[in-house]
Length: 256
Image 1 (cartoon, one colour):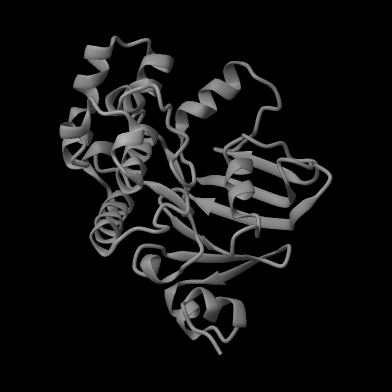
Image 2: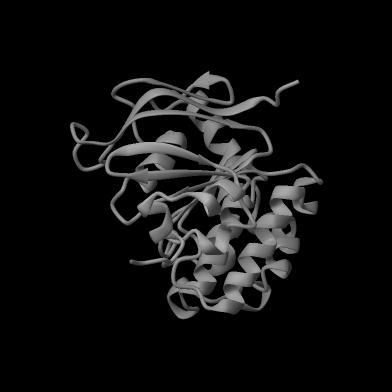
């Protein structure tokens, strides 16, 4: 019996956020089932970020069909879109779009305060296990600009997980990290995928973009490629390693 489908795209045009008439990827035919971990690889500017934003309902779809959790993504703000936002966690690229005037703790608990109307104290108690596991408890009162980009990535991840989403989308989260932080991310994402205590043991459905396949080869179970305005599904880890496609080999760190 097949698992429920979390993301389903049929002939979708993924467009530039600055120019909706400019397709970055088309057509995209893609199914993400519950509990799967997909790694989407591609160079900068290949459309990976727009693909994630489209799946999260942050960008409109000019052509094709998009369903998330079996339902069309709402086109306008309202209760349906708010409910979708609560079920989808997003870790944005770079510094994670944290609010610079909020402390680390205030950034992490923001979804709980906004969606569940919790007090700061109640929200802080709720996320205390995440803050401790992420080693952010000692940084709770700091502002993002004072803690360095590797730690702001963890803050962004903690914020995305605060509501225990059914789907987690991560945009190039390992870019520029040193080996210690890379190891932490690999271990934690692997634990999420298998079923982390924060999610009550439920395996997390993950989509992770990257411009370097190597750190994620042992994390993902499905791999796809965004290149030359085309969407290509590669397969599993063995198929990635066996691929002779030039762009795949480059994303594995090989050069001619």
